[in-house]
Amino acid sequence: MKHITPNIARTKAQSKAFGRVTLTLTRQLSSNSQPPLPIRSLLVSTSTALCTPIFPAIGFINLCLRIIIPDPNLRYKFNASLGTICNIAFYYVLPFGIEFSPLLLPCAISNGIVAGGAYTVLDLTARYQSRLLTKYNVNILRNPIIAGGGIGATTGLIAPYFYGTISESLYHIEGLSDSLNSVLWGFPFFTQVSCMTGFAAGVMMYPILHYPIYGIEALKWQGFSGVLLLASGVTLYYMYRPDGIGRRRTDEDGTVLDGRTYVICPDGAFVERNKVPLLSTIVRYDAKEAKFGAYSIEEGQWMGDPQLKEKGQMIAESVRRYQKPGWWDGGGGGDRTRYTFDNQILAFYCEWWDRGLGEKHADRLVHVMGVKELQAYEDCMYRTDWVVKSIMEMNDIVSDGKLAYSNSHGQLQYQNQEDVVNRNDEKMRANIQQMKMYGNVISDREGKRRVESIQATSVAVQLLMVAMRNISGSDIATNANSIAITDIEEIARNRAPGILLYKKEEPKGLKGQSVESQLEVLHWEAPSVDQALREWQERQGEERGRKIRNGLLIASGILLSLCLKS
Image (cartoon, rainbow, N blue to C red; front, side, top):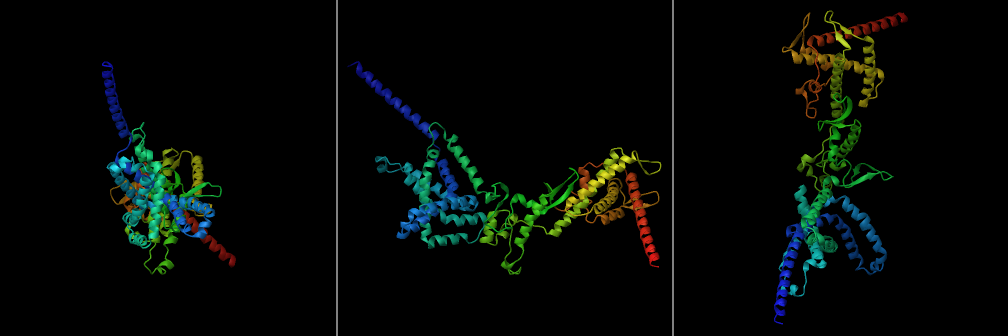
């Protein structure tokens, strides 16, 4: 026995030491797997905010039960009506809450803050719980009624009083906080429904949050709870962003169509932010890409396919109809101004609550040009773009070697006359078809006349650009006399009213779109002054000859008609 007792004592000491080591390792492992208190509180807050769109469905069921249970007749039919209540709650109320969740953003913020704060208080209380709770091995944080239902009921009791205040802070709405608080204080029934809704939601959320809060022993909290917190934050942004409101439009076959339907504001009160540039879209010819496209005056950039103009004008017309004075402002004499926003939340509150939001959020307003103003821009750029196109085509002919100039006679000499004629005929037919891209129904004859007029204008503009580059004075010297640059500019402007010739003339939205700017971007190889002058003089001679021939034909026709009458 003397030899056995020391061995037993030694074994007990080793067991205690092993137990202490095991307990220390367990605590260290637990501390690594369970997130700290701030992270746990954030998990509760973000989860509550994410579940806020579900609360209306739970509240609807709670409301129906509070009406049915006290009434004996309704309670008798309870079994038959329960299915209908759940059907309405989960097939109508719940989808509506999720689809229009951005409207519930103030509610989600308030619910999240109150729920996170309640959990923090409860956690600190449990950490320093009384001896009675310790004696009976009661952990309030692991009790779903106290931890889940208690936090939920607290949230449902306190959070609604901050919905209006947060809405006013986010959107600068007036009077919403006072109205909501008056309803809550004046009708305790709503507070009771809210409190019980929070209790039920908290009990249901408790098992979902158990592992994120307490962690998994095999994983560090950063790899599990931290990732869940990050995912919750991303989901919160995606769910409550203003652009996510509404539902996708679908056809009879269920195919998703472009755009969304918006049921919370009238048509024209809201325009998606990515579609606002389409409202000022015109059709233009892109000389750099050698194709037609839609160009936004508002953004000052190309948008894509020319058909986008039609789409943009349909949206613009709905905005014009919405903003048109009507009975709501006394035919235009009242103070009811209708605003269109690129944020649907602001559009909703401006339409149904605070009509002065347009003045407070001027940077989010959508402005629409008049039809005539937009057409004036398109006509201006039509002439500008086609002059640039014609100048570059003349430049291509010279650079291809199919057109040369004779220094001895000062006449245009073609190396291959037949090829040049064929090429010009092909370009004329192509240009006539391109003229019809502007939506104007014109005949081939009218198209040819317009193309020839643009080509004649381009010769004058080309001489003007060459003179501006190479001549320091105000006149161009010729063999007989001098030609004032201002006279050439006047001819060009008379032929193409509204044309943008110089950079200094470019308005906002058309920066870099004048003839001068486009030719620089296209690396235009300008001919010499003499070469441009000879071509302009020949064009002037052709026009004078055409006028003389037309005059002779008219005079001959008049004389012939007089002779026939006599």
